[in-house]
Length: 536
Image 1 (cartoon, rainbow, N blue to C red):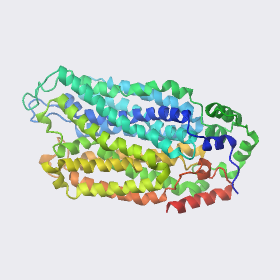
Image 2: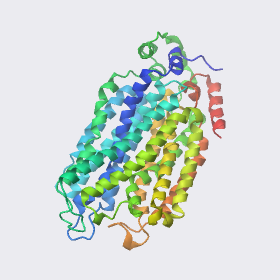
Image 3: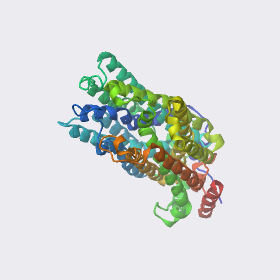
Image 4: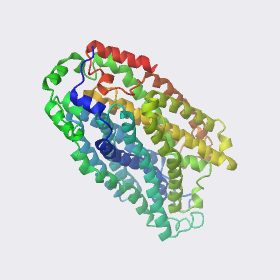
């Protein structure tokens, strides 16, 4: 038999959309803006780092990062993010969302600045320092995933909760776009100030000494938006669901939400104590009860995020290599160092503007109408279709008359990633688990995603190399080629469709309904079972 909802939580569930909702979206969203900027801006400057630190005198082509260095520079922040998601996700359930939220932000600001100040007496020294700071930057970014999602889900009303959580995540699109725009402005300014010939014309003169400032400025800029929101993060009250259901402080929960909602809320001390004593609200993450109620749900959220990020990050981090393969970015020797940064940034900005950003906001607009399950299944389906449509006739797309068609197809895979599983895999784990385990389970799901991202990022470095040893990048072994790599990613997307069947629909339900926290033990089991049935 379902129990009556706590007044303070019901007030949040039925609240009309108001100013505090938008304030929470902006505060949490600016963290995600910074996360995306910091994670993806490195792909804009890796070619430049290769030229500055690894160009050999007299070589026919500009220097590139050696495979092990490129893997470290591209992947170390992802490793830090994975660790941060697990640690801060767990800590958010132990200490509270708000207390941990400030720690992650400070870490992001400090390490963004430190990344741009990387130093060393040799090329490897600079890269080692850069990797050290980017690991800890990633660690802070990792904490933002479970905390931002959990805070937004616990503040939102049940009618528009999906849109609010998705709007926080959609700021990632603006972060990727901002990375491209900042790189365009910085590289254009330096190119105007320091005119240099192409590498083919004069290898030594093609790299202006001032180019070393470009990558540093681009990396350090990420500290600005994060720093601007610190004051407002610290002013946010703890979420009522944590205060009432986890900390069991009815008076504080009622007081905080009375101020937020501008209404008088009854203090229900006895009811909270009664709820806390029920077996349905005391099982832990590694208990049989959790496995019975939420085991398949956790498998669904972790597997779909893992599979999605293999495809998403391998494309996003290395899209510049695909653009080079179809000659959208000219051969490195035909450009100077600064022009190469500009060309790569322009390509990423166009993709973000035309497909990445619109995809996120389509999700925001439609998630509470179409539902999470439908959008995720549809997104994986179209990603599979477009990936195979690019991969199977791959030679066709590399021909000069067909390049625009290639970019359109490539953009559509990004559009349906973002109007699809890239958004929903972030939203659902923040809704379907109990309050005392919500941040932890979101962190586990997100960490599985980052494990997929690491496989995509590291694996694609090697897999996308030509099968012909004479055509591989310097120091790389032969791979399976871009075409076969894209076929593998198509198969990964298809598997994502299958595992989506394990993910329950959360549209229009309260968080306590979904987790079974507002029912007795048997009622909770029925809800878990019905959620699985509905998803299939």
